[in-house]
Image (cartoon, rainbow, N blue to C red; front, side, top):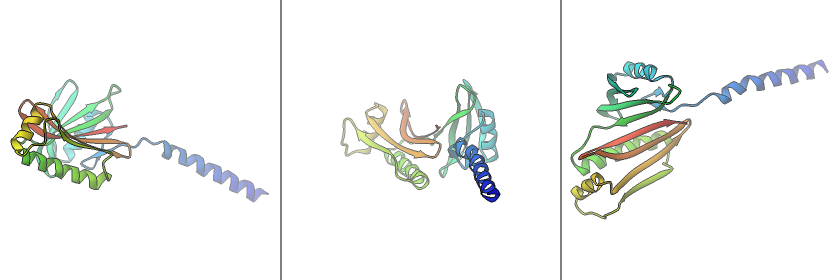
Length: 179
């Protein structure tokens, strides 16, 4: 009887000890750095990986470094209302040619597919297309008539890959968002 009671108590203690681990918040990682803590802590963690602090605008630090095989990637560290990092936005250096822009998108998508598996959303469409000339595709993106978006889900959040532009400047953007 005592042995059964000891086994029961040990079983209950083991089960209770696992509850905190099961409830622990999962976070995505960016460049092998877990996306957590304050913006300042994340900036310091990325600095240890070779990123260089550039500036802070409206509470959002900007660092520049290597990501996905690209140099000079601009990375915004976006805090939530609670001051904890909720997202990382990485912008691959801009391209003037559709072919190079699409190659960058495909390369990053391939990397994310290896990391997260098949994307849960994948859209590549032109409202005015199809086009034969790559320059027409670039103009379509600049006119907001092109959507390139792939969404991946990971433990702790999602990653959205898109083609973006600011005026005539077109680039690949990767947004890591914690749940």
